Length: 148
Image 1: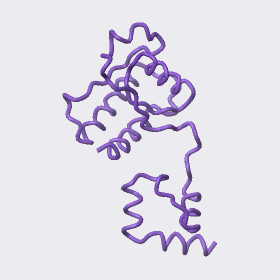
Image 2 (image 1 turned 30 degrees about the vertical axis):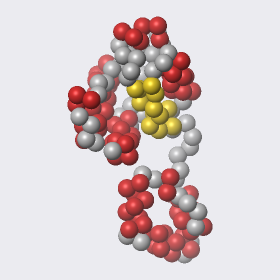
Image 3 (image 1 turned 90 degrees about the vertical axis):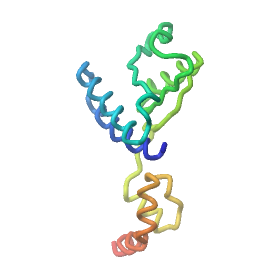
Image 4 (image 1 turned 45 degrees about the vertical axis):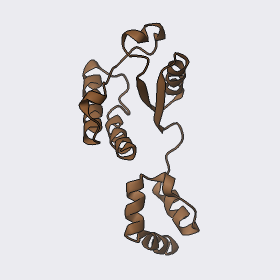
């Protein structure tokens, strides 16, 4: 379930990328996308709540989030890591879905790993990896890379 959820949340988080300053309408729309991603991944509606809370004021978080709640993160920058750290210090559970601080891999790097016989399975979602393997697409990638 988490793999499917991770892919869906990644797509939902694309909504926030390159937005600059978010408006209240942006936040509501993004929360709706995240909610739909969770529901589509099979998470029951009664099992989650999306709460935009003031992480910059940790002393009042208990008003928004119960201590037993787990917060899920996509880390884009040092501030994201700082938020994760602050919640952990307060005793909240945290889980990193994605750490986007490092440069994303490109298809050329994946193709080269296929040609070199190096493991590349962690560079793509499991469903993509399985599709490529099941359809013997690695041979096509090798042929294309060697013809260059």
